[in-house]
Length: 158
Image 1: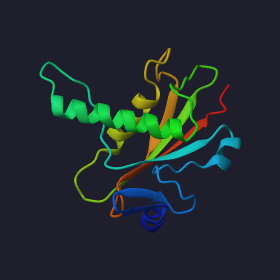
Image 2: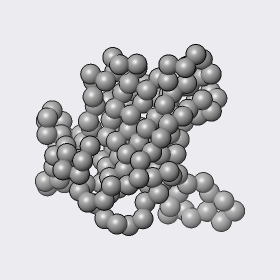
Image 3: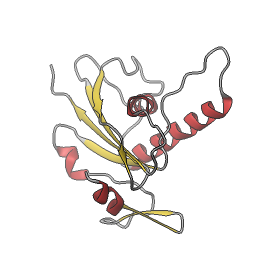
Image 4: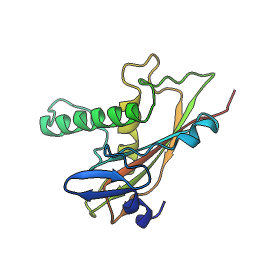
């Protein structure tokens, strides 16, 4: 997806995020046709992305609160797109999660941490966690709207 396509997906007028091809005001882009192909599902998380965060000996409470809020937004968006949470991946049925980050400014985002944060949000409390999850992330694309495209596939590996 190019920058212009990303800006066509969402219009930021009066604080609402509107999907151009579906009229959905929730800011969700779900590709229902992809669900039939190898268990693939897509959704788009709008707004500024927040990367994975763990609290250490001296946690940054503001950053932790921001990360938890972002995880809730990812979970809500995935649920609204028809994805049952928490996801479960097993040795027999591993999952592949790919992310693509779009940023409106050149403030440094770490696509790897954003990817890990999204995987963390989708596998909350799951048995085995995200042990059997693979995937990829692309370098950040700057200009346009703040959003992350997420694609989930079954790997087909047995």
